Length: 270
Image (tube, rainbow, N blue to C red):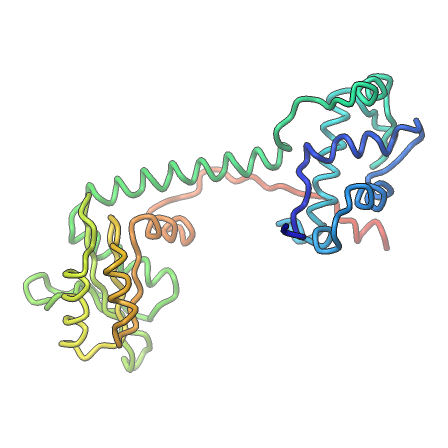
């Protein structure tokens, strides 16, 4: 069992409600130790940080559990960070029931964000496939430059590329180069044959570094061949391609930004 697993927002509702069963005022901070002991949580789980890096994930989820119970009328807010159980909450305890919830608002937003990015990735890949091969060759150069590889990049001449579609100079003096091959395919999978051709092209250019990028997939055999090669070859398939494009904001633009903020506990504990 993974000792770093932190209970979900939903799983923390009943323990939090039970911690307030005496009808007195309580706070999430006060409830942390008791609930952790009751649920037999490991020290590792209690130390897992929230993505904000400013509080633990356990504390964050307890806070959301408190908010959910207040919204459901099971707890009432009595002051900053403090709460008390209500008659409805006591009734829920007797029934050993909690409000019907699946995830906290923050978790729901995270899931929506992931779903939105997946739709964006699908649309992005379709857009790339609908453009020309020449456009895709330049896109590969643009992406690698955005990722910080090299100081200058160029697409080779189509009729004299020798199996190489682009070249990136790694330093101002041109001591190192990265050679690229771009395959804008709609369905076909990059096979051992294409990988062999790319390795041979690198050899003919006396190159040691190569990046093969495709809008489709790369076969297991082709990946194994690249690993066995004496060249340093990086392979990027369609799924990884659009993931990098979203991460480095290539071909996309932000039109709306949300800023989630949390209480700075350090400030209040000075």
